[in-house]
Amino acid sequence: MEALKRLGRNRVTRLNEFGLTKATNRRNYAHLHTLIGFVLGFLMAFATLLFYDRQLLSCEQIEHHSISTEHFYDYFVSSGFAVSSSSSGGSSGSENLIRDNEFLITSTQSTQGSASTAASGSENVVDFAEIDLHQHLESEVRVLCMVLTCPKYHSSRAAHVKATWGQRCTKLIFVSSVPDEELGVVNVIDEEADTYHDLWNKTREGFRYVHEHFLDDYDWFLKADDDTYVIMENLRYMLYAYSPDMPIYFGYKLIRYKLPYMSGGAAYVLSKEALQRFMESSFHNEAICPKAQRFGAEDFYMGVCLRNVGVYMGDSRNALANDSKPKFFPLDLLSYMEPQWNTTIADWLIDMTPYPVEVGLDCCSNYSIAFHYTDPNDMYAFEFLIYRFQGFGLKRLPESLPRKFSEAEVQDLFQSDLETTTVSMDDTTLPDNF
Image 1 (cartoon, rainbow, N blue to C red):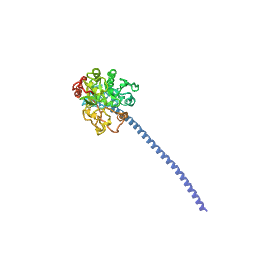
Image 2: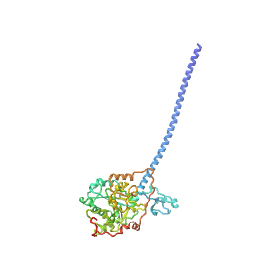
Image 3: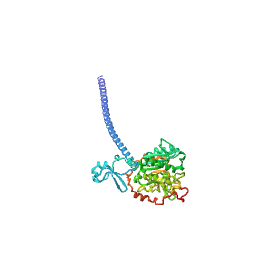
Image 4: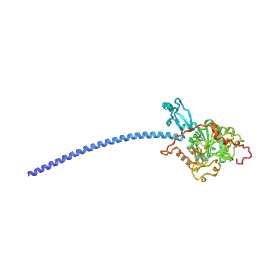
């Protein structure tokens, strides 16, 4: 009996001990869970701080990258130029330095901000934030764009010119025969005379209007059609080397009756002096400039009128140093991309171009300016590819504006086209369709 009692007491004791141990274990587990929770909370807080710090750094990097990209974009689309601090140490303000066909602009900010750099005579590239390259070129080369259109193409063509490349002209006007307030059309001829066969009359009257109202306000005067696309930055880049006081005009050179002239469809651009001579010496002189008439070849007649008053014909192939490719084109870009030229290049263009017409990727200058027969869809494609598209990781070398040409150099470049005898409209031997 005693043995049974002892056995019972021992069982109760073991049960009590087991219960005590179990309770102790529960307390230990609770403490362990608390400790683990604390450690995990600390780790999560530490990770959060690290992540937040990296986010701040990333935001700063993104902001810096965006600012840098914006400045590079302005630099690239304006055809860029080298900007350097003065190497003379004591100079202040901006000065022009000519070196190897490059035009360098001395930055006042850079010169004043780094005396040690100036004293050492080294040239450093100025931060793009210090100077707006695009605005510089726009202010230096003021271009009025005169776009020929007609009522049936106001909305289907001209409106898209205005929405794309036309907005980069210093001044944009449309020459037509019917008012259009949205476009800002200038009426220069009657509606019944606004046909393809009246282009010469329309061009004459358009330039008359421009001369009367805008001669003193702009440096260069571009004539283009409503189906031509123009890269204005490249136009200004080319024109920068020339003074608007020189009698010169640029375009795509063609030959007709052994006389050179610039294609009208490809667009051409007159200096202020060229426009002045056209209006004051040619316009009213039927002996040297074809009179207003139907079926006149507008671009050829313009060439005759300008050459007869000593205006240089600037073949755009020779307008930039180290670039002998055409820059104005009488056809659309895709026509030149076809490797087999005889399937896309018209015979008339091959016959009238005084040099071989190239096709493929080497057809055109990297600083091409204008393409004719460009429909609105292609205009917007140009807009995207030129002004928005970027190839990641592609590096572009810094560019510089060309140096200014003297008039003697211009004569050496383009005088040959003026050496033939002046054309007289009274010459009875001229062809009937001259």
